[in-house]
Image (cartoon, rainbow, N blue to C red; front, side, top):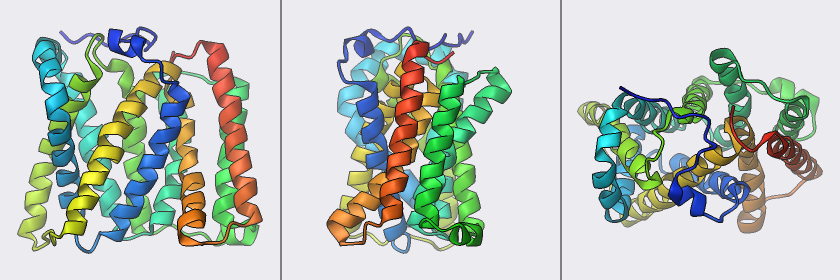
Length: 317
């Protein structure tokens, strides 16, 4: 019998010993993911989407194995007892989510992809309300709205006409579907088995997710789309595996456990912030007034929602 985890207030012993602030972890996560979207778009001609997804997680599994296998052996009975929850989390959080995101990047820009990620907080709130009847405090709702306004300020460049002219294409719709899968994964983390070590959990769902992607990658090759292997491709995949897969997922899972899905989801709004700032620092792109205003609104919204979440008990209901 599977047993759903109660609200993530009951942290694992390892998590309880961690002194890292969940808000720091949730800030680093979108930084790592922003780099993933840039790499995914930049290499989409050399690495097709299913190949990118499969090898990203194959490399991540190889990185995790030396640290996780001893915990997996100890936790194996718990993993098997909760196999349905683990299969679902691996399929939507690793396989489906990543495959749809990389497929979408074949037809849209990295900028659009990063900005569309900012609808995740709204999706998380909607899914939690529809299926779990969770509600946010008014201050948290205000924080989500203010932060979303900041995203729209960056997207529109401070112009309502530019915002009205924004159009979705097929790639954008695939990205939005990917975001829906990620939102469902985030809400479903409440069913993560109690007492399962974080490394056991991530290793198990990574293996499950990669096995889900394997037939899609084989089908992609059957259609004539192969990876153009090069030193740059290997370095890119290794970087995405370490930062955007292993570290980002550990940080995200820990953050959701500590502050709840709705508050954690709001930190995704930092992705366009990091994208704008990194482009300004490293690429010499212009930092406009609408960027500054948007960043200020996003940070204000995060501060309001995080503060309300802390007052609520810093756990998901």
